[in-house]
Length: 583
Image (tube, rainbow, N blue to C red; front, side, top):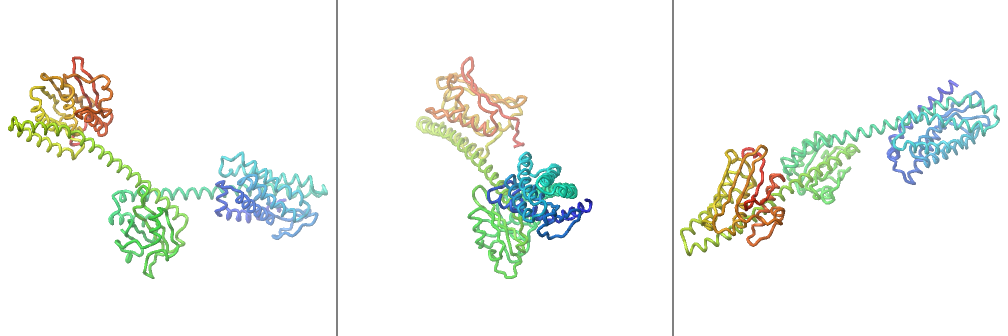
């Protein structure tokens, strides 16, 4: 028994060598990912059936108490039986591929065993498909595991030869000879089969860990490369940024040369071939143009597809990666190699990951840039809507004064020029200091006081130290104009507007009050939140002020409207503690 066990262990080494080779076959990797269809299940049944036949030929022929360790097994005599490792392939097929694969592999291996004849022909022929089917159903209890653990495989592997020995005792004759043979081959087969199955599953798990570790390393490598070259690409594709990107990729991607292009020409080329691949030359490669058109990665394993007229050019293969912003390809990264054999799965995976990372990040950057531009355009549009009606009213007043008081018309024209000059000067920036905003308001009041004479007075209370706080340009003037046009329109005299800017613990409070008619109750919640149409157009002006406050300072700075108990309206808002020197 000991001698037979050692012989089977030696043969098991050969079998496990074949198993190791199996774990490197791509088709076998697909089985681990459970990509099973009808034709793949048939292919896997054939694969593991052949592995089972190999386990048969790795066995030892037993004649009563003598062994024949020959590698080639001929048809057996009626008194002979083979101590085999057939069930290793059958059980592994069932554990990995399920009942269908286990049954198919068992039928192939079992038919071969039955064809050899001998004492255990029927027992071994039947036990193989039964064992494969049972292993497939057992594997369903561990479906959450990608590959069953070696300890579980060892336990399952022990039952496979026990089933085989049981059928041998039931079906084979004569009983005395069968019992003798089972005593000789039973324990060695249980040991070698179970250990082989456990080692096989260990090999598979190791192979998977290697693959996952390799994928993780390449992903980390792609992230590192993308992180280093993104700051350059965000500055735009120029010869300078392209040169920096190419040098980083040459060092990190282990390529023979790296080129970076825009849609029309080569921007930079570093590494082998840089003596004749010069920046500025147009893109001539059909491969590169195809990448620009389709937006997909292309690989060239032949020098015929590379646009080089030099016969002695060392570059023989390339991977072309698109640089995308949104849906558009804005440039290319070309990874060159001296031999096609240097482009393997790792290089392809790196190029694909790098291309996706760069494109996603550049698309996000483009989206942020577009969002900023749209926000700025929206603010400019809102600012442009505030002043036209004031300008038209002022010009109408100047026309009237020219006839009745030319000197006052001249003064009003000068003040209008001052107001417009301040307006043009400060619209170049969305935020100005409170002091600058008050200057702008004073220029407005100089003009409006001529139009409305003794109708109202304006008081200002500005707490020292708040002049440098930042406020959106053109905030106070529309609010004061709203008080004049709406609150004080029914007061021929005695109107009052009070402006207070005070520093509080967590913000700077700005309050504009008047003693006019107040705001109708139905409009209190709508004013500033909805563009209200009015005959003089100021309803949209207050709305625009509120939107700019929210956009530039946040929702906590929105306008709050309320009516005073003694009559009139209060407009209040808060601005954060940001100083002009911090902007």
